[in-house]
Amino acid sequence: MSLLIFDLDGTLIDSRLDLANAVNATRAHTGREPLEHTLIFSYVGNGAPVLIRKALGEAAPQEEVDAALQFFLGWYRAHAVVHTVLYPGVFESLVSLHEAGHKLAVLTNKPVRISHEIMRHFELSHLMMKVYGGNSFAQKKPHPVGIDTLRAEAGVTQEATWMVGDSSVDILTARAAGVSACGVTYGFQPETLSDPVPDLLCHQFEEFADHVLRLS
Image (cartoon, rainbow, N blue to C red; front, side, top):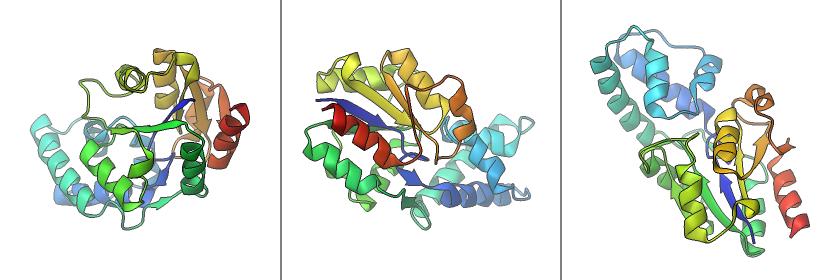
């Protein structure tokens, strides 16, 4: 039995357009012009506060950033699954891994309430042991607290644990927790997966599932 921990955005779900629309709605709310979507995608991965700080710019007063963050969270929650879809093979692979007896969990820097709503929308909640978000702990990824907590709850060793994600944030989290790391190249930030290098690199989600199922 393994504990398989998944990032959400860029790993299980393609949420790029909904996130970009939410950021640009927030910029419009603050009287700013829209940003290119590719630039917004590069801001994703370290949580909503960092995303909005980058979207408004370093010169924006903290009070304005705080207010914009609240607007963003409300707007995004209301529009989180307008365009968002599961990546190909995700649902079927998660079902196969769950049926094989592996413990599955989500560890994302996205707010936990929105994360739960997205998981319920795609009918994945029953497959997950836990879903933890960016506000579930005092520290976000790449701090290892999320993985350490999940391992303790699952009763699984470091050697039997995988962290799967689309960016260096996820690989750094795995390294900090002393567990194996899988990088997926179809996500938001594949260019960051060269440093640090993951233990396994997959171009499709099914490749990771097949790897685990072969080992087991």
